[in-house]
Length: 467
Ligand code: 2HG
Ligand code: ZN
Image (cartoon, rainbow, N blue to C red; front, side):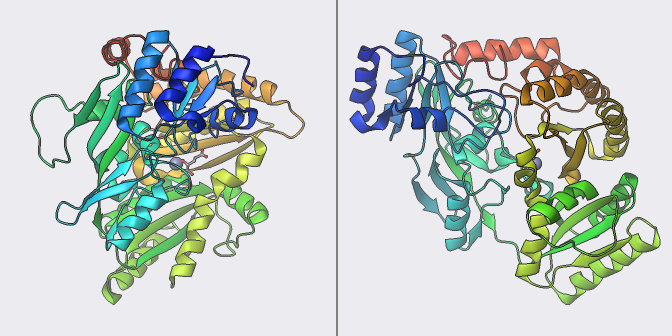
């Protein structure tokens, strides 16, 4: 049981809204649904409720307003910033039962998804219709569309397809005041004033609940082919990006460090891509449409070798090889989770990434000489994932505190580079204190006013993004 309890009257009213079996108070549910993938806070929700319709969500929000109960939205709980944590006796609203896909339209190339539809479920559905849902990441097997929208999830194909925001054609939301809004109705063109859909995308559930969404689909790519290249120094990655990007339409451009590679080789049982050891590795993907495209990719690879930007490389020759090469990058986050990493997810404009990384690296090396540092990320989007691994002998609290001290210097660099303290994982609880490093006082004040309009009683995911 949680140490925070809702009154019997409130529990009865919740059961009257969603049904007896859709309100859970057992310890296992409270533990499971009260947390996301972050390991910083302890879950402590008051109860979990599982609505099945927009009207049920609305009734829950109205009840919460009446009794001033804090609500936390819960999707696949794969977030890395604590946006779905319920650590203070909140009522968690899970979208697990709102997982229907409907209203597919081949001409519009859109489909309607309940907030609880799992990303992979949508990807498979699109494939069955001969189409493609391109937003993809390692947690696609459990993350939900509602959560993806609320955090504007990015992932590994952003360079070509953009973030979740680019795929949302329409939204149904229930605001913190309990109003149902249908936003944009699936329209491609709609210049009729403020587009409020955009506020709920990336709003991290602080304005209201995303209940369902009309998602865009696109043509499926043909014969995706992956190249992994060993790069001697970070600056060279930019030369490689420029060379390939000027001739080929890349569907991904990722990077990881030798240490990241070592972790997946030693702990996820993967093979090195080639024998040569390099400081960094770039992973590129493109649609290999013809022999000419493949020949062009080889030519570009050789040009990069001649420039000294690349030491060695390999190109996938089958779907299996393509998938295995992807695992070198995609398995990093899960593999290093065993070291309780301290995570940062920062960005700047792509061209400035080498200088930015060098400066951050010096701060990190100076301040964490005894910690293992693992770099990887979506370099084609200017997005770096910096993970500091906890030494086995150190307590979690001490480790997080030491890492927290360094944030000031790290985020001062972010500020100087006009970057972001959260490129794709969101602000949640963990990055809230650092928001002023990438947003002005005026902007934050306006954000507070916007929250006040949609959520006058402050019941929607309180303490996330803003205080
Ligand atoms: C990735 O790109 C995810 O693999 C996770 O965004 C990043 O674990 C991380 O820091
Ligand atoms: Zn990422």
